[in-house]
Length: 483
Image (cartoon, rainbow, N blue to C red):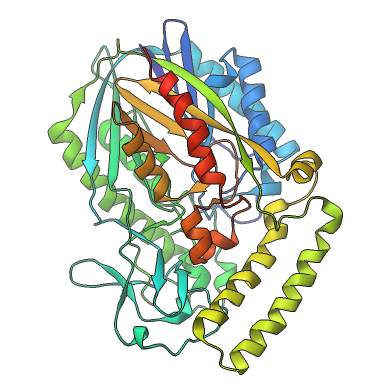
């Protein structure tokens, strides 16, 4: 097996709107064995349009000779990063040109390597599930402001951080701590690639938690917080660079399903500036990275690089929710619905209706406000055909390497995806990777669509989409796992 790594600045590709706190990078790993090759690109971006991500994959493949089925476009969903229109059109042209030159160099300098790997059970020490059912109210989502008890358990009694649009339900459940203790993806992984001289070429680490820490000031007490925006590669970027500093070579991080998973970030008063937010990113990177390195140094094993090495990309059709307009001409009706729901919400609060009724209106109100964002414009958003048929084709990338199965899934998926993959494909070590192929918003499960909360508001798929996704993907991966 041969491999190479690269760390590419994206400066000069997009037009910056904020000053740089850190550079914003694309990190690449290239692997080849026999006739099979694969390129995984991980970008410090927020949300690339799927059509533009597809164009990146297609043109990079055409211009480098790597099969398109073996090219991954993965982004870390970093909040202090460029997104949408900033990564489209001419900006994407420039990103493709710069990436192609980087990848050509990767191919030219790929060298024989050995690979060492470790699996790290992080428990619940570093992340928590930010969705919970609150008795008498419904499902809520928190972004920040959580407290942690002496055992590290996440809790709150504060309805103001539950995205309730200012509504303060008077319920007995708020008289004591409400714990956010649903499942997390506990597994971290680390891979170290070493050349024949014993030198580290690069490392790949993987965990599953949201990189939204570089903008902690967004909801702070600082009246000037909106002037604090800086580009920052968040804790995942600091962690990757820490790995490079410790082991040498180039550090790369890939993120698992994390739509409902957050780091245990410190949101106490005082994080009202970019500098304090960046400091919290560095603290988390050191904490999470130290744990990964501790276990890796004790337990890493050499992988069998002569084991099956293969790649593939699968097409999956996902249906849209019925409330998505079937053409762009009807999009203004979403705002009409939003205005109607705003009046209904205000009346429900004034009339002191039951909390669960008010919460249902809040969910519908939030969702009506999100529909335009999810559909976007005809140039880069859903195509006219996708809106008309209410069906969207997404792509799932798969890689078998060293006894592991890496699966790149679209959108911001929930921990449900990790649990399903590891329980369904028990004959191999399965590593789900989130946010591949561009931004498809949140990938809601039937449960999250029932409970409400941010995942419900921010998902365009229908109730049966994820069950259908799993039903389509399972036999494809079963076939892929045959030697």
